[in-house]
Image (cartoon, rainbow, N blue to C red; front, side):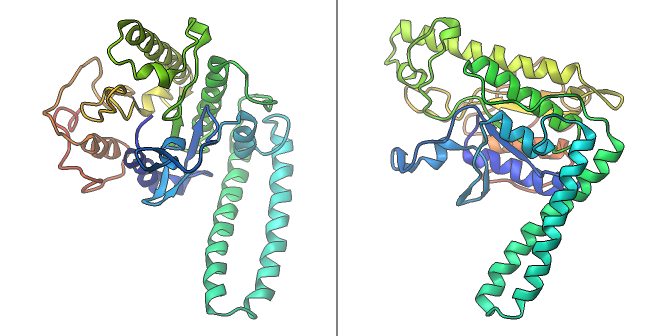
Length: 325
């Protein structure tokens, strides 16, 4: 995961790339955002529950239930069957037609303030209409991969993660969206990883106070998370897309908002950039001068995604060695 300012990046990309897809973006996770109030040093728990923001003060909640993700992508049918999906789209369109008629009758009776609220509501309705039109077009042109609607989230972390990754691959494969933010773990998560025989809570042992045994356990968890992440890369690599694979046409930023969780240090962040052939030259470990803003990297990523921006957050320019490769 990355911090809030980094995933305002997803908002910028979604605004542009989302013009051509049903969903402008997906915000997904593996742990319910159950915390409220203040979580750390006076910061709202909103900063731990999501990495995606609509604006400086509006967080976008993550969805952790694979069933709900499936229904958002393909409707509430039991599978990706085309006929069932088309029937659901027609039902949604009839409901929208009814709502539009009701709004026409209501609009003449409203004052200026209520008209403003109604305008925001109408914008949301128009977005739904656009998504339905796009879905109907895709339903006619694209044969969806077969997948049954998940019953619920698997109990094991690893199974849950793989299922959510499968859904992301299908979202890309069907061009439902081109922007996804995915949290393997919520900030401050105290999940235990029994698959690798670590019963300690992740957050608890990350404050290791230089205890070698705790440091080793944290390293094992990090390695396990990376191994889990490689399943996603393998799925993208083996899924055909155009003249290559989905991985060939995807840019992924994988990392953390802390470099030393024991001290809550947020400088020199370990960040991996994975991209397909021709997007960014891989197989390199690059180090940049101290105090180089991470947002410089995201200017490069936006460029590669075809979304140009002169600046982003506290950026001071684009990173060397990534501009022309």
